Image (cartoon, rainbow, N blue to C red):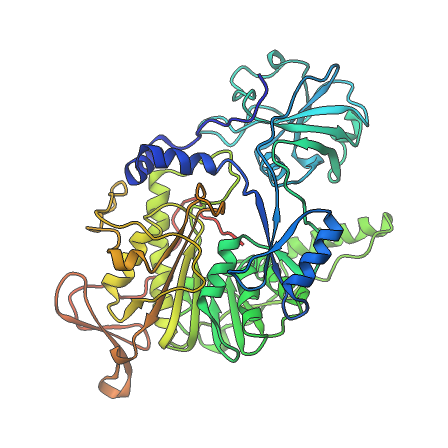
Length: 542
């Protein structure tokens, strides 16, 4: 039988952990929701150019769909989709196509089938043929699904025996745009145009460029919750692809300074490209490990990062190919500056949208994170938190967010901030769309020592946890907003500014000077750590 009912594909230990945290019934609801796309497509409007109402009217005409202005979040419009639809696979003499997992997830979000994602097809496929589209998932413990690109098959028996069952992984019906010969020769372009998908989600790619930007609703909420004012100096520590960076600049009316950091040349270039596309001039972006952002490096040691030679060679080949095909030229490689670190207490706002296990993004047909990876990611996030705490000004705000449902990366890290930095306090959030955080006794995460509890009732009500199975129908997401207390900053010996807090292991006073050095105290928990990212599937959401 051909249908779309994906089985739960999680690491067994992770699955058991979530069942303990959420309860059997709630865990099943949340985890199954991750296989489905949200029925609403969220677009952030560039309010420096147009109003949400004007954009909603224009999109409705362009796409012939219903577009609504989201009244609770500034500058957001929503496009309604449908699904899951009961697709009838009862056509005669129909061909079949198998795509890889990433292509399958894109189809669920409203995309057509592009040639790089095709793995196998029926023989004698011709342009214009009707095609059933299914997806092949990776084998357990492997990065390969068992099907080599270019495979021809007429029935399931022609495929390897250990290919994961496709019966519950059919995505809909489409029309072939190319013949089978072209299908596996071309490296780009549409292979199949979807005409009857399980989920009817309008594709907004390339629509109103510079006026709107595709962005998940909780991601826009996170930037709005910061409530940045014109003239502020704001740091986005892990900025790529630039959604929150540009949202912050937009909320600041393009007045002030938004500094964006990321670890690679490509990602920093992506942030700058988004800013330019939206006409934002207050954004600066640097290549830098955000764990080291609170450690100032001598300016003489930092130079602009030249383009990568491999990237230059690849772009040259592309440029030559575009000339042959009479296509517009590619852009020149961008020079990216390296960050040199920043003084402590120097930002009005610090946004830490931490790299995470991404166990809230949807649709996702397979989750392979292990308990070890969950624990390692949580520890890495604390390195970033330590730096963020030192960079925000007294009276300023630190916003922490993730796109995961894992409480170890969410509530447990909030508990860490509150316990280790008593001068940081949770504050109320606006706008508020998500639900409360987890409260009560904490569930141990593998071998990681458990905090005694998640959050108190009062603390729980101050954070936002977005439930992918809830009425909001969003991705799984988490937001916490902290303010650094002014009266916990004082002048120490030698005139250096110091933060006063309590060490986790005792009542002895611990102080951190502006250079991040611990003075006194019984624990090193407040020291800025510059540990490298341990092995783990750590991802970002836009």
